[in-house]
Structure formats: structure tokens, C-alpha cells
Length: 430
Image (cartoon, rainbow, N blue to C red; front, top):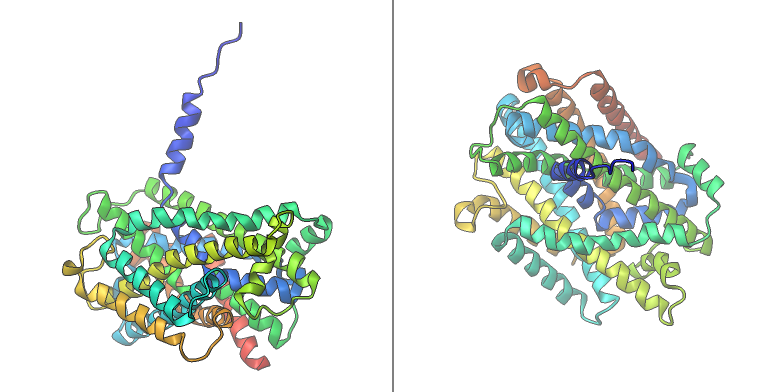
């Protein structure tokens, strides 16, 4: 009788791998926020399979950027703004913090508006009431609840994103054409194409992710008993961080590809080439429930749960990353695990950024369009921030033996050139 194989080592290895997942996975999940869903859906609806290749080709560059940010936080024990403050001039520091605060605040406003518009598909309540309700809920939970507890609850709502991969595989696809469009880049030199591709870059490789992942690595260090946020980093720590980061980015980009493909297959092919409302975006999920009597309502329900869940998850990330940046610049206490009385400045920034974001919803911009414009703004704002991250991560003075090597440098510089080129080309086509 052959010996029975011991399954314990396999289970132990799986569990060991799962335990290293943390900031990278959270950051990857937050990347597919309402702005991302709206931008990818609009891209698929407007250009069909034309920008499907972006999901595949952005993956190594997105991974490299987030790995550099996480490595900065892990090695220095400080967030990006704190590192800039220590090694660069005040004008550079204020420019960096200003960029991320402005971009994040606008993004917060767009996300709150999108959540209200999604809820409005199900609840016939005034838009203003819904935006106020979401704003108050987010602030109460963010200020008075541990973010770890809060995010665990919301991640279950984020599972509604699985509706996009499921939809991809239940509807008929011309797979040879899809795979060709995924691998072979298609580029048009027109304002419409460059506008939306800058938005795709901006909602994927986005400023708030840079600051968030670095600061969350510092939070992880503190949770492991290093109260000052500092510890002696070894290569095992770097390897674990890279596993976490890579897993998060792969999940994020696979979801991106699915949203683009569903938009192209369902919306573009049915003649919906401009998503004007949340209801238009929700139509992409109708094939998922087409056999049910009330398919339209079920599609809206799934879409709304996803937008609201991801919005509730993303807005604290947006306001939190802005608060980390400001607090690090002014040496304030900064942590989502601190009580309000312990970090007035930190929570003050969160409150002000969220309230200004709320006010943005009353200037007459359509919530869905605001998400896409926000993504484009992030695509432009990310360029100077990328330059700084490249310089910091490659500095031997700051990073020591953990500075960027040739592969990291090559990927980071290429990302900077492509995103910078897309932003410049966009301005030339206006």
C-alpha cells in the first residue's frame, strides 16, 4: 500500500503565504474604486476592445510603482511625505502634499457623488440627502472605529466586484479577438482616446495609492511591536512585502480587464458609447441576471452594492492618505488606530477633506462624469510624484542596501515617461 502523503506542509505553506498579505492587497482592492469602475466602463463602452491591452501592460509598471512605495515605508519606517520632509526642501514638500491633498479631495467628492447616484437607483431619495448620509456615515466610522475592523466588513461588500469576472465568462466572447486585443496595443492620436487613456493610467497608477501603501507598511511595523515605526529590515521582510504587493496588483488588474471587457462586450456592442448615468453603467451587468424576471433591477442592485461598498472602502483611503501626508509634513501624530483625542490634526484633515469633497457635489457636475475627470486629473498629478518616488527609492543615502536595482529603475522610469507623454499629448490635442 503506497504511503499517504502528508497534506500538512501544503496547508502550512498556503497559510504562510496568506499571512503575508496586507497593505498590498488592501491597496489593490481600493484601486478599483468607483472612479476606476466608471473610467474602465466608459473606456470599454467608447472604444470597445481598443484599450483592453492597457490592463496587461500596466500590471508590471503598477506593481513596480507600488513596490517602490511600500519599500520606502518599510525601510525608512516613515511615510513618503515624512521622507520628503527629511531629505528635500520645503517647496518640494509643500508641492507634494498639495498635489495629493487636492487630487484626493476631488476624488472623495466624485466617489461620494457616485455612491449617492448608485443608491438613487434603488432608493428614491433626494441626491443631497444621500450624499449627506454617506458623508456622515464615513466620518463616524473612520474617526470612531478601528480601520481594521471597518475594512474587514467592507471587503465583503467589495466581493460584488466578482460580478464583472462572472459576467465575462457567462456571455459569448469572440476569444481570439479578445486575446489579440489584450496583447496587441492599439493607439489613436485623438483627444478622446488620449483623454480616456490618461484617465485609465490615472485611476490605476494613482497618487493616493503611493502614500497609502507606504504609510500602511509603517502601520504594520508599529502593530508588530515597534512603536516608533522603525525596525531593522531584512531581505525576508522585503520578499514578503513583494508577495503581498504582487498579489494585490494582479487581483486589481484582472478586475480592471474584466470591467473593460464587460463594457466593450455589453455596452459598446449594444450602442451605448457614452455612460451618462449610473443606470447606464449598471446595464453592463444585465447579462449576469438576464434569466431572472426583473433583470434590470437585479443588475442595478449588484452594481449599487459594488459602488457603495467600494466607495465606503475607498473614501477613507483617500482622506487617510491625504491626512498622512499633511500630518507627516507638520510632524503630527498620524494613525487610523489612534483615538480622536490623540490625533486632532490627523482627523481634522480627514474631516475637512471629506466635507470639501461633499461640497464639490453641489457645483453641478454629473457624478459619473466627475469620476472620469477625476481619473484624468490623477493621471496628470501622478507624473511629478512618480519622479520623486523614483529618486527616493534609488537613493543609497535613504534606502541603503534596499535601494532600487536596475529592473525597478527601468520599470519606474518607463512608467514616468509613458504617463508623462500621455499627459503632454493630451494637452497638445486640446
